[in-house]
Image 1 (cartoon, rainbow, N blue to C red):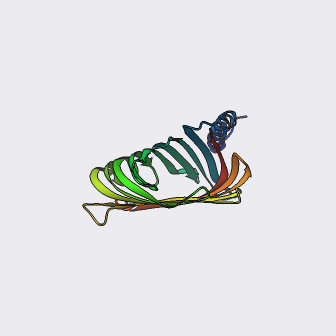
Image 2: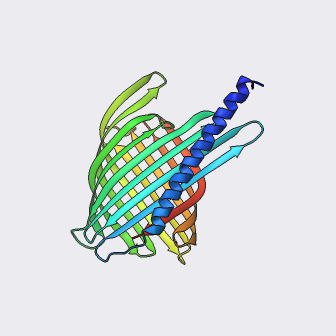
Image 3: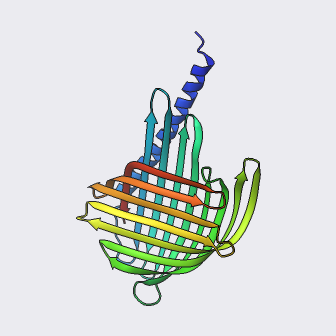
Length: 263
């Protein structure tokens, strides 16, 4: 018996969603296995790796939507230099229509060569975002940072610097435009650990163009994690982004797991 075309299409979409969820789960399991196997420590060099997968699924008789986020971080920390790598991917559909396909990859370093709590930083960042109408964007620059609070369980950091940006944006449905500009980049970061069980951390950027006061970027993220094991926690994440050039913004609140390990 031949199925109607609408049922065939629905099964194909369902299989696509299942495959996406399976791939995220497999990636998470692979990272978790590496985390557990990598329980090493060195007095001269520290490594840190973290993988988080969160998401929201909503399905009713009349509507369905889902968003899946994946984040992979890796740090190498020596006495005077720290190297950080962060990669994030967000994918989502609503009523079988794409709403998110956003990717960000950042590589930066910190150089501690002056007085305590102060350091220089350099950054290279690439991102693309369906929801923000960013076809591609590249940023690189230098700056300085200072730890206002610098304790093992409480940390507060501010930084500022200059970035050079080149981007290709979707201005409207039929027009794209390439922009180049210098931006001032102000950043606020913090982390609070309570009784080794509750962890609250956040990262917030305000990047305004030096040539136009109406051109600015806001990036804001916060995480609340409850540790269920030393290397595994339940995480609630909130992320907000705004790109003034495309007049687009997004807000995501998701729930999931975070695994991390020092070695």
